[in-house]
Amino acid sequence: MSDLKDIAFKVRQHIIRMSTDGGCFVGASLSATDLIVYLYAEYLNINKDNLDDPNRDYLFLSKGHDVPALYGTFAEIGLMDPERLKNHLSTSDHIYWHPNTKIDGIEFHSGSLGHLPSVALGVALDIKMRGGNNKVICILGDGELNEGSCWEAVLVAGAHKLDNLIFVVDRNHFQANMATEDLIPLEPLHDKFTAFGAAVKRIDGHSFEALREAFNAYPFQEGKLNVVIADTVRGKGLPSIEARADRWFCNFNHDEVESLLKELAGEEVTELTSETLVVR
Amino acid sequence: MSYEELLTKLALEDDRFVVMTAENRALVRNLPAKLGKRFVDTGITEQTMVGAAAGLALRGRIPVLHALATFLSMRAFEFIRTDAGIPNLPVKLSSFIPGFLSDGNGPTHQAVEDISIMRGIPNVTVFAAADEQDLVGMLPAIWASPNPAYVRINTRQTDYNHTPFEIGKAEVICEGTDVTILTYGLLFEQALVAVNILKEQGVSVGLVNMRSLKPVDEQAILKAAKSNLVVTLEDHFNIGGLYSIVAETLLKHQTTAKVMPYGLDGKWFKPALLPAVLEYEGFTGKQIAEKILGHTTNAIQPEIATPEFAE
Image 1 (cartoon, rainbow over the protein chains, first blue to last red):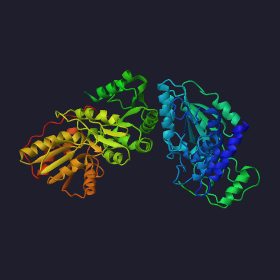
Image 2 (image 1 turned 180 degrees about the horizontal axis):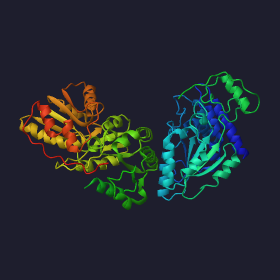
Image 3 (image 1 turned 45 degrees about the vertical axis):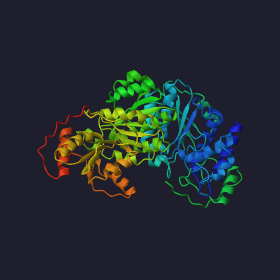
Image 4 (image 1 turned 90 degrees about the vertical axis):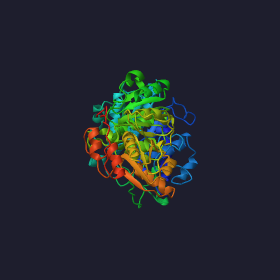
């Protein structure tokens, strides 16, 4: 467990370092960090030696804004040279604001929301056809659930009894620029997924114990799509930006980055002057 | 051989094939029993079907997808672009009742901009069959190619015996110096009628079944441009379809020609049964010939069979 916490801390450091010189989606990445770290570092059968193995597990990042958490995790678990993170937003590499398959380990590009639930569904369908027992995970944002195609995929996965597919909602309660419940309310989310035929677990997405307990219960129910609603906090780890609608995309100056790294380590509260950029 | 027989044969020979439909089984009614799990009906979910097809293709499958042309090309457009086009996955789109073939449905079902939007997506190839023999002749090569493909399905029968298909090649039916008709899909039938009438009137007329719209046979277009008049005949808006393809090709090669666009000009067509649609919109062989001639003739328009499917 201390290993996971240590990895998550280092991943958060990577994210903060990527939040300057063009910036990145810091809040969205920090909410999904513990989830992504748990899945790659402990749960999933995915490593640098088995990427071409059709019997490995799959993880699709539909909520593409959290890709800095993925880059950071890859750097910490040996899927990517940590030095490459310095190439964020450089034309010399492929490390930018949304996932793409030129990075080894990234299953599919994303950025347009509501696509990867169906792509992951197709992969899960093929695994079922072939009688395989590998798992397919798709991480979705809660704002992403505005897209009707997410719900189509839930219906279709249920119809095809894809209990090898796990949708994980990073429930940080924010869409791009505002709280989900102030725009398109999602609650009661557990009941919605249940009504659509899924087997649902709702947990604290920052607790490795809770993540472990939930995912070890896979498959949650035979013949049903698994859904994990992971309650998380946007900007988790940095009190100065936590749970703020106006800290979606951040492009901090270098002094602020140094200050945020100290804040992450619990040293001092940060004063931030950089304005949030609205990208979407 | 029918479309369904071809698909059944290839799918049974090669287990990479997965047949999918968004609850549109008109072309594939007998396949569920033959393919078992490799037949996947996602329900009325065109976009999810395309996304899932991309996932299947990631695992080495060749998904062949069935839906109405308008919903497949337009409702699922961004999924085709993003999930099949960007990664260049072999997702094969069988697009049913395109153009005038959706005769009585009304504008919601009229795919008359599909060629335009599909050919705009990098990596996506675009084809249209003149009849079922043309269709069955072209599909093995299209399905064997590594690219995503959009195919206007046409299972109508004509008595024309087509030459073998090659991706990127047009089929030259005849050549002429006065006028050359370039066409694809359903209107090939009427173009044959028009050519006979024009020949009887002493016109030196050429006819080309374009069938591979992307990649397109530029040489066939440039050769047609040597006749005095080129006619682009299509059940599609003039914008973005064959007329645009010909214009782009001529400009690319810095060639000029007199071109008559013969398609839909900025409005959807009048819904009715197919023979009446063709007559009302001016697309019977006789009307095409007379418009090209600039005068009426006493030629007799052969009876046009109504389509076998209506959805």
